[in-house]
Length: 343
Ligand code: SF4
Image 1 (cartoon, helix red, strand yellow):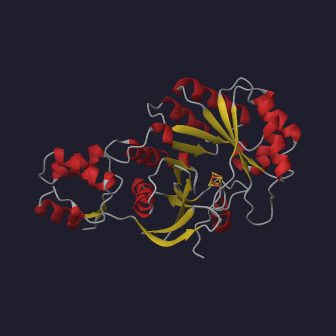
Image 2: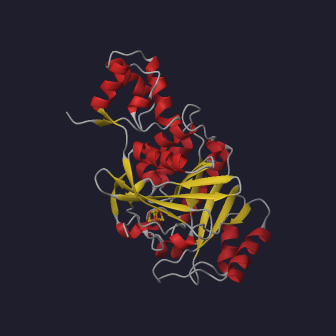
Image 3: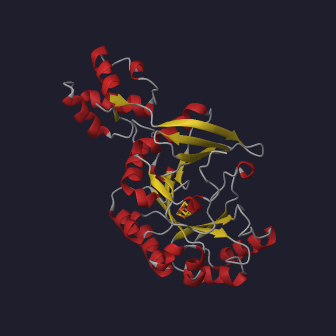
């Protein structure tokens, strides 16, 4: 009989598994803690679980979903890029970024991506498949086990469109948030979408309160459609309307991300148009200077980036503007650079 992967199962699923094996429901809670709080690497380390049940688990379940192919530390900062291989031989990447007391882990939600945003290396791969909840959780367990600094933030900004893998991303987030799992506050978990409107609207109705970011990258539909084909389906105005709805419903600011591309979306007119577009929307704006990959697009110079940010700042003071300089440039670990390829 083929073994089933236990990693990624939630509390209720583990309880059911225990009852079906003739154990008490209570054991499900113990399993949950061993799997996620302790991140065990062998069923035999579960000291409060009886031997015969451990043997049953060894016989029927798999504990690991990923193997590490490569771990690449940056020489410029404290970033590390990890290349994982899935059991069916796909490659995915995860980035750990440490700055002062903040340790952010950028997770992948899919092997590849179907959306083909033109500035993104992952988009060039096409979609291989969605990652399981266990594969998402195992990325974080690996980083936790292999760094000294406690993880403070998780962002779904690695490979893939998280809302194309809606259930598994939210199930993994629930494990990260659980006090018996990783115990991260909901404000420490951010899901970033390229703008899947139906899923954004579905998420707004969820009880879960993880932070939401929308990758906007343009101030009008003409430019956005040129760099993000998904914009043909759902327009900027629809996304902004839903972003406002998210901020109002969840009492949490929506974040709009804006990758600055030289000569494409970085002019003073673009900044003014964006400022007008976001007028009256409770939000944060993250400006991300483009990380160059293969020549088609370039990063604007620093003066242009500063000017763009100032125009937004000065236009109104109701939203926060941050310039996010990507970490791990020397290891191609910045936003849009993850290609999941074995070099
Ligand atoms: S930016 Fe995100 S959504 Fe767009 S192609 Fe890359 S991974 Fe996919």
